Image 1: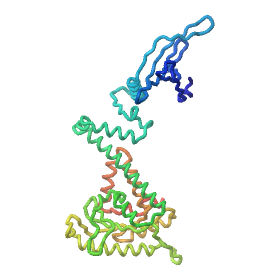
Image 2 (image 1 turned 90 degrees about the horizontal axis):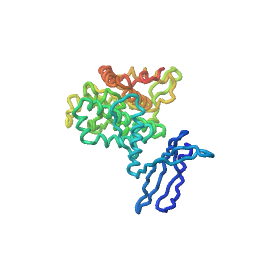
Image 3 (image 1 turned 180 degrees about the vertical axis):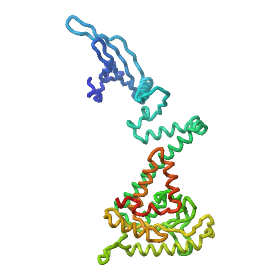
Image 4 (image 1 turned 135 degrees about the horizontal axis):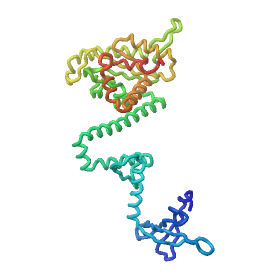
Length: 369
């Protein structure tokens, strides 16, 4: 049987009627010998068992032609045949490595875990089961390598979650979803997208009777709170003044800026030393981020105008949902950069100590390239 026909299996009954068999598969053939494997199907009352028979032949020259004579054979029932399969797969994986050493093969559904050949979900499940063994857990807890391994594993899972979150935001924007509630929910669940300058958002949103903020974000450096105001992505951001040949904030943005200035005054007044019911929430000269509109397809002049207008505001920064998405994707890129990740993140935090809003300006999002 040729290699192309290996997947064509013809099962037929034996003369005894007790078993079935398939065509022999030639494993090796030379001028003097041949090795084949013959699959047998043994029918039981509740299942069919697969058995195999390994047969070696020798070739002898007969008066007219070559004769193939059976030399010896080895029969394997299903259990040892499966062990042979697992052993071959695991040792083939080791053969792919370049150096000698000690290796661990992790069993998946029917073989050894190799990412290139198996569904990643199956491999992840197998890995989680292996790591769940008490002996391995105790070892990882006791040795120094354990903390590094756990950190790497957590980091990989975290990056996967972050990438999925950015894909969800892109899906919302591309589907023209305009409801503020959808983006409110996304931002609450993924406040990391606003940058390393912040930690997880506060659950508290009402700072005074009638004043309920979209989000409150604690800063990493001081712990003081900042305001996030979310508007719809279909709102206009900039308008063009034909007479004076310049861009200016739209009425939607102007209203949001006015709203944030009032929130800033109220929050500074009621939380300068901590909110009455939540003394841990402190806001000293808070600032605000407004997320509104789209900037996909903007020309260079629009991005430059928003950058300039932002730098002339005091305590308020306006960014678009596309810039928020770009910022989140950039953060993922930095975190997945490799061995320099920790240093890069700490350096980024230090750079933001005195100017935590810099990355929210369009000029730092790559808009002016």
